[in-house]
Image 1 (cartoon, rainbow, N blue to C red):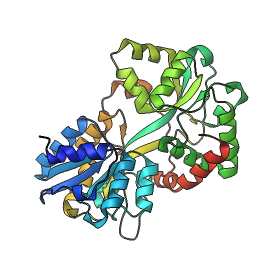
Image 2: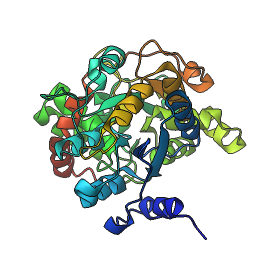
Image 3: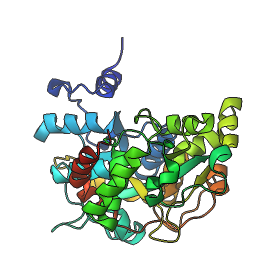
Image 4: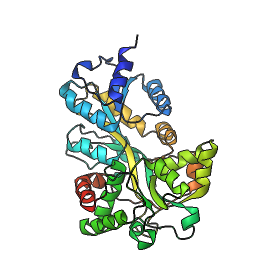
Length: 348
C-alpha cells in the first residue's frame, strides 16, 4: 500500500492536479509546495521543526505543475508557502495573485532589496533565498584567449556557427533576456537576439548541462549556463565529467559593465494560507544563517544574505565576480516583453 502523502507527491510530480486529492494536514504545521527537489532540503525542514516545533508537510513538483495546482485548488488549497526556482515564475505567481502580502523586519534586514519583490500596500509577495549566476562557457581549444567577455559579444561575427543555448522559452533564458531589455531597451535587445540566433551552431535543445558537454565536445564553441550546473560537474567524481571540465573554461560576463546576470530561488506566503503564523516563521527561518547555508550548498548556489558564508570548493574555485544589481523583481516584470522578443527573433 502506498500512503496518501506519497501518492500526492507522485501525482504532483507529473503535473496532474486533482482537486479532490487535497491532503488533510495537521494544524500545527506549515504546508509547503516546493519546486526544489534536493535531499539536502530534508535537513532544512528538520532544522525548522527542531527550532520551532512546527511540522513541515510538503509536495514537491516542477514550478509549472505547482502553479497549476494552486490555480485549480483556489480557496481550498492547503498550501501555506510556495517556493519557486526562477524570477520569471515568481513574478508570474505574484501577477496572478497566488501570493499573499508578507512583511517582516527580520526579512527586510537580511534579504537585500534587489533580491525580493517590490513592496505592495501590505508587504512583499516573495523573498529571494538563494542565487546563481548565468555565465558563458567556452571550448578552450577553439577560444582560449578570445572567449566572449559579455552577453553582447555573443552576437559578434567571430562566433558564427559557435553559439549554443537551451530554448529561449525556458525561464532561465527569459530572465536573462529580460535583464538585457531592461539595460539595453527592446530595440537593441531584439537586434542582439537576432544576431545571436544567426551565430547558432545548432537549434536550441537540452538543458544547461547539455550545453556544457556539447561545448567540451566541440559541437559548440560557446554556450550559456547557470553556475550550479558547472559546479556539479566540477564536484563530480566521474572521469567523463572531469574530462568535460578539463576542456571548457568560463567567463563572468560584463565585468567591465553592469555585471553578470543573477537569478534566485525564492518563496512567499500563499494567498489562501491557513497557517499564516507558521508560514511567516518558516519564511523568516529561510533567511537564517543555518537555512541559508543548507539552501545554497544543496544546489551549489550562493546565499542571498550577504553575511552568510558557505564552504563549497567548486564555487570557491570559480572565484568572486561583479553581479548585476538589477532588481530581480524588475526582471520578472519584463517577462512578457522577453517572450514576444524571442519570438520575433526566431529564438526557439
